[in-house]
Amino acid sequence: MSIIFHLAFVITFEGIHMQVSSTEEKVKSTGIAHIGILVQDLERSIKFYTGLLDMEVVRRDDDKVFLHTKGTQDSLTLFKTDIPIIPGGLTHFGVFVDEDNFQKAMHYIRKNNIKILPNPHRRKPGMYVYIEDPDGYKVEIST
Image 1 (tube, rainbow, N blue to C red):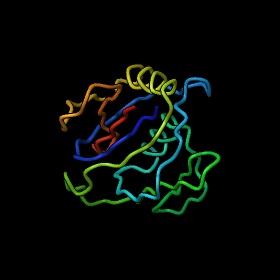
Image 2 (cartoon, rainbow, N blue to C red):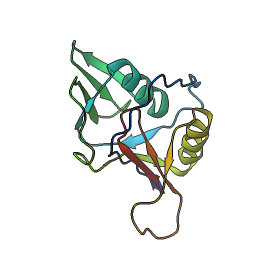
Image 3 (cartoon, one colour):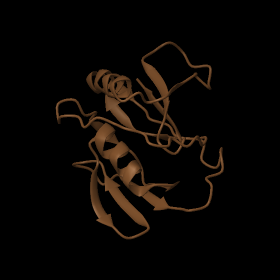
């Protein structure tokens, strides 16, 4: 089984604090396609994606950062913006992980007080959760 992360909607998290996880606690995704998203704070978003999904920074400029899922060609690009991010501009994106890593994701989400959202789709029963990243993007994790 696999799990998907989806992102959308904007709510600013001022002063968010996340605990650093050990490698054993980090969620190992099986991949995402290249996606570029706007973010208000590059450092905060780097911490979120490297902390939760064990992604690595492969290239960095003043206004953008390229992250890869380790061992894959999958890429997520974070673009710094000073303008407000418009809710609904990106409805979501997906990240796959195996069932064991779903439990790691839930542990990380709870430990870091990441906002869990209601299910926006009428999905069949299964292991899934919708969360928000620091810029309010909706992330769906499901098996």
